[in-house]
Image (cartoon, rainbow, N blue to C red; front, side, top):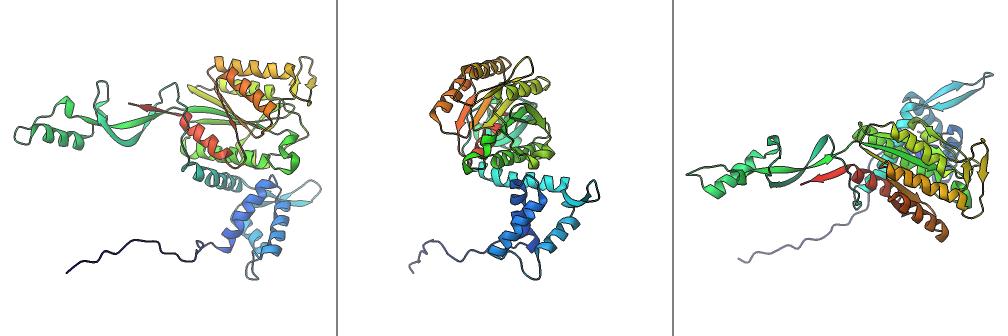
Length: 373
């Protein structure tokens, strides 16, 4: 009897969304809104009510007021009493962590599917991660790395079972990837141009910062991440304060940001250090010795750019690479970033907002690895 061969194919059916409770559905939207409103709960709820009217997000059985009550019961928000007896709502540390995890899921989930970068670290790390690949034993490899089952299999193949012998040439070890501890400073431009021209650039930037901080806290707890913002001046911000980050009526003092970043990294004991800088505008401001500001928003000022190049070269001497993520497409600004990057021998991306997070995560993970053969 002739057997019949059934061809394989695809079975199409209507997409069914994973089950979510009414609270979970609203919570996903709320986390986006509270990030856009920089932690302003009342504004986020107003937006949620407007979306509910337009898209029918709730039902009579579960309303926006029920959702707010659940946020309180679950510990995501708390009542506050302001001076003068007026009330309000504060978001809690639990919600701050949820926002970081939400950003991590959004950005890091995409990064896993992306291509790897090409950075290598200059220093060997203290711990290692098995890669699942085998290679021949080499002099100097630790004995604890020998894979016994594979080595015995080689001995049987090479020498036979009757006269069993195990030689050095039979030994196999599992390849490993040593990971170095990394100190990172993430610089975020909060000058006014980050919200100009109808484009919100600050929200993706702080999402990246939240996601990167959550990645380090959960996966690489021995690494360190400092986040600084720069406008007319530069100052560090706590990770818990990232959801509240806003732009101001500032110029762009890139030199102040770099100086603070290098000061922070000088205090770190980790061998590997790096700076990530997210900016969309040209440097337009400097601190002067007398405490005043030198500002020039018109074009590229040679006095300001020369100071930027000097800071980049100084970071290079300290062994601190700078990776610049430029959210702009102006040719003269790209020329500045090219010269800045050459001074540091770092790396530059001219990127849109959509792939900003993926690029930063690829570089972060690649910079802290070194393949050991």
